[in-house]
Image 1: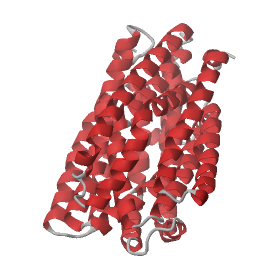
Image 2 (image 1 turned 135 degrees about the horizontal axis):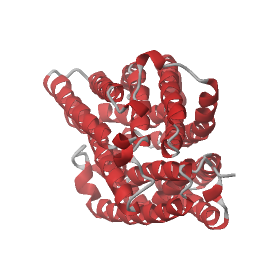
Image 3 (image 1 turned 135 degrees about the vertical axis):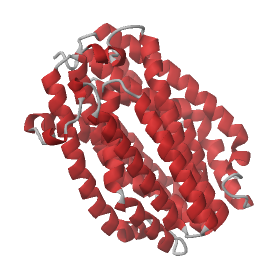
Image 4 (image 1 turned 45 degrees about the vertical axis):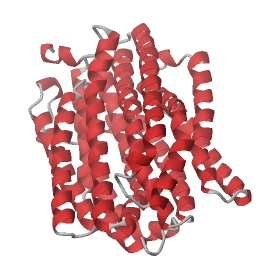
Length: 448
């Protein structure tokens, strides 16, 4: 396996391996955030407040639908990384081809559900009537490309699990440029409406999915994808689902809570929806170090526990947590002080900027708590204990968050009540994760 030594995370300097893997993830997530933000900026500036609100109101619902399958992709990545770290070629091949076959099934299911369920779910969310028609158009076109979104995430999961975070970055940059160019042409030049923004995203995602596919078809033999070998292996599928279902269920449950939060924001009108939607795009940049390090830690822990390098896994987890917390908090402080200027790039309406700034000033100083919770979730998934973060986030990020908003907003009908739901639940989940990390024997989970 000489060709794969450079992608193994079971040898060499711990901090260099994690940083080398995380940096391309950071740039990849940055470009992904850029082209998501480009949709909102171009829509907001060329099509106005109502169109921006339509795109913004679809965000939580999109993550609800996509989040479950992304969780399954994370679970498959843990299984693949474990076999890769253990140098089990037969298991590695079975896990890669089972992942691809399952991804194709998931993509088809999501297409049908997303396209046909859009109007009903958006109505249940209480989407403002002025926004609803454009939201339905955006949502349905977006989910007509579900196969591309799902397969891209599954393919990236395979590549990252064997230590390759560079090629996904390259392909994401290409698709980001395509997306922005199509947005400018279809919306800025031809004024086609919000549906064009969704169409641009779908086309760019198909491009990145095909590029990942071609990379896997030409990869080193031990983890090369062969079209003829794509099939479901029952035992491997059980491993993938057992690792991925908790992460997928967690994503979906959190998304349900976020949909509930969005429904409460919707009650404050179109300006609130547009302002909070614009802030969510800016907040996405604050999540970048959190996302890249938590993903890097999942792969690092999976490979090293597969190779029975327990002390190395423990040291890597500490390094990743410290780096993530520091980076996330620095970004949070920056967003706090520059929020009005950043928000004005999306829309120059004073009321829109005021809502977005209020949310930024409530949440950004607490990014370190969000970072710690996500890092712990990534570490525990890599250790094969994905049910722990599922339970913690189900309790605090869903049940507690919804209960808090439902009760408090009845007595204090202010949008700030909704904003405070995030720092409060981040605090509670971080406390529980810290206790679990210090008191449990999570590091030897796979050995047992």
